[in-house]
Amino acid sequence: MTDTVAVTGGNGQIGRAVLDHLSGVGYRTVNLSRGSREESHADAYLRTDTLEMGEVYGSLAKSDADAVVHLGMIPTPESGPGYRTFESNAMSTYHVLEAASGLGIDTVALASSLSAVGGGFEPDPIAVDEFPVDESQRPTPSTSYGLGKQTLEILADGFARRSDGPRTITSLRFPWVVDDEMARETFVEPDRRLAALRDSEHFRTQRNTLFAYAHVSDVVSLVEATVTASFDGHERVWVSAPDTVTETPTRELLAEVYPDAELRDGFPDSEYASLVDTAKATSLFDWQPQRRWRDEG
Image (cartoon, rainbow, N blue to C red; front, side, top):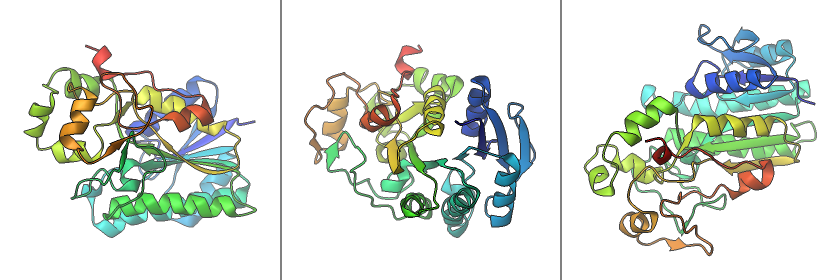
C-alpha cells in the first residue's frame, strides 16, 4: 500500500499541482527540491540536489517514501548549456532509480517528454510515419534535452531488469502542460486557426509537439494512478488532451502539416482529435483525459 509519496521538483508548476492533488486525496507527501520551498501542500520539505547521489539517497531514506515521482529536472533547454540540460535529465534519473533500488522503493514515475522521440525543441521537423502517434513511434532526438529524455527512458529499462530495481516504473511523456489561466490566455483568446499559427514564431515548436497539450488536472490524475500501479517492469506512456491546440480540423491539419504520414486504422473521427494516442494510459491506469480548451470558452 502506498502511503507516502516523495516528489522531486515539487516547487515547479507540475510539482506543486501534484503535491496539492496527492495531499488532497490523502497521501503523505514530501517535496524534494533544490531551492527554497515555494509551495504549502507537502507534509515535509527536504532541500535536495538531485544531481548529488548522496543527497537523493539521504532524502528518500528520510522521507520514508513508498513511491517517488521524479519531476525535478530542467524543464526547457534554453536555461543553460547543453551538458547541464542532459545531466539534469539523465543523471538525476539515475540517482533516483539507484536510490529507490537501494531503499526498496517499488514504484517510480518519471517525467519524460515528447522530446524523447525527437519532438519539442528539435531544429528539424519531427519524423512521424503514422498517426496517431503511440508508444511505437521511433525515437529520433538530437538535442541535449531530447537525448536526455531518451536516456532517462533507457535507464528505466535497465533498472527494470535488475532484481533489486523498482518493480513498477512509468515514463510519462508529457506535452505542454497548461492550467486554466494559461489555457485561457493561449487558446481561448487568440486566433487558433492554422493560417494564423503559421505566422507565429512558435509554429515550429507546435508542429514538433504535434499540436498537443494536456491540462494539469488530467496530468495529476494520471500521476496519482502511477503511484498505485502494480505492473512489473518499465512502461512508456503518452499523455495528451483529447484534442489539438488548433481550431483547424485534425484531418485538414494532417494534410497540410504532415502530408507524408499515414493514418492508422481506427483513427478517431472527432473533428479535433489529438494526434497522440493515449490508449495505453487507459489500458494500464484506467485513465482518460477530460479537459479540452475549446470547452472552456
